[in-house]
Length: 146
Image (cartoon, rainbow, N blue to C red; front, side, top):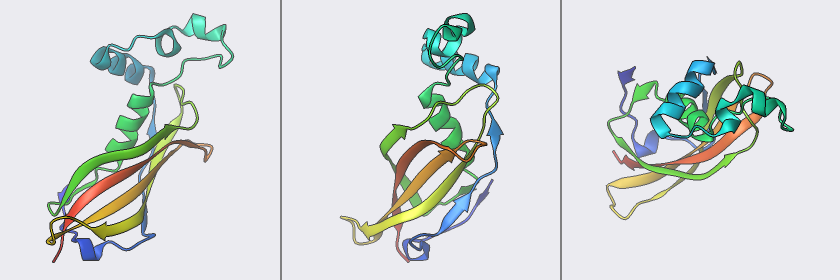
């Protein structure tokens, strides 16, 4: 991880970056359940899940989001501030043993209330080892102008 100043003018629509992958483990399920208190059987009860249509444990959507977004944090941009995330959807389930990576595309740029700043939207897709999108969201940034 390193610092890299990227100003509003430096962002180009349709620019894309792809992260490395990360395999989801049973430990991830247990740690995330402990952090959040979400011990629902869909995530934690292997035997119960065998009786359900999905047949196996499903990763917490919030865990997939946290790991997928964490993969994007390879550089620190001191010129940008996260305003949050919009339009998050859990598209497909993630299971123990799946490997996910993130693909980030600059999808929008605009003016901000403060004329010294601009807005940038990064469209994020989290994708499994089969090339299937499992989660989508838009990351909203406020970025300093030059």
